[in-house]
Length: 433
Image 1 (tube, rainbow, N blue to C red):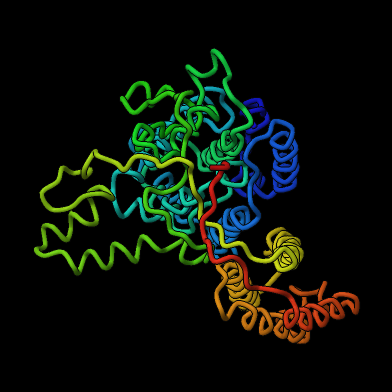
Image 2: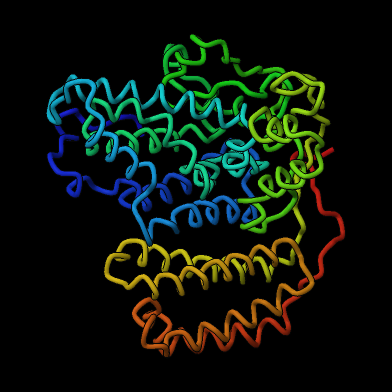
């Protein structure tokens, strides 16, 4: 997952020829997560729970839905600046110099965006989704915000003054792909690489809510930026890291996971008196309050041990049921993502609405909401109806098969017999007390 491609292998003269590397590595992501799971079992590590993995994968799915309909604002604005603002001579698309400038420039831009995403409340609202998991494994890397790209594009515009869009697009994807492998606790220390590269050890600190971890290690590829700008902290071997938000959201609702902090800002904006303070709610730190410094208080709550995480224990049979249906949704989504250009905008819109409803339903199941199984029955009925609608029939081809339809009917019947009630305790310790 390092930059394994040689500069010469990343040269594309036309923007439309640049591959979608993210789509290409989806299967590799799955293989690596299975490998991580096996290693975690072998080493006696804390194993990920399916509800948390569901939350991470679901966030990743939702973050890419806008791409069904239009090119990302990040690339659109970049192209406009490149074509209309001419201050410096353009660099050649097939020059090694262009490659290395983009490589380092992209990573520096990411550092500053990432830092502002923690230091500016509005930006944090778009980034907190990624930090909402209370576990730390490769699936956490997929927990992306649908709103983040609408803030990050600003930090890459300086590159548009000299770097061709197709070269930028390659490095944007490579920078993101690099960050996948650092979301794991099965890799300890990489020796000399720890001084230069962002590693799992460094990024574990970034995802921690221990006081020494807060607002540290913003790097994408190179940890040198944190060392240079004073935001570096080394992982402590004598203190177990607690992952997630200081104030956990305690839900697997995918839309709540995406937008809960926007709701918080909205409430605080109208609650706070004075326009100066109202604007400060938006542009100062997430912990800011009137009378505090720009970033808020530097006194953070200490971690209580044993670390407890949000985990409504739904019944085993319901968990297996949801897992099987979620795997079906992933297979279908992967196919739609791969061939999205073949479908009409209206068909993709209806599919996206159904997809969001499905993920909301699964989230309600994991949250043990009383109406969860009622929502699931409605979803199953829709699964039988949708393949019969000409407009979106091609999006649900799998559901036209008799075996799948029988499975849907049996699933509908099963929802009346599967146990949903579980122990009332909604948090569990990561380790035995």
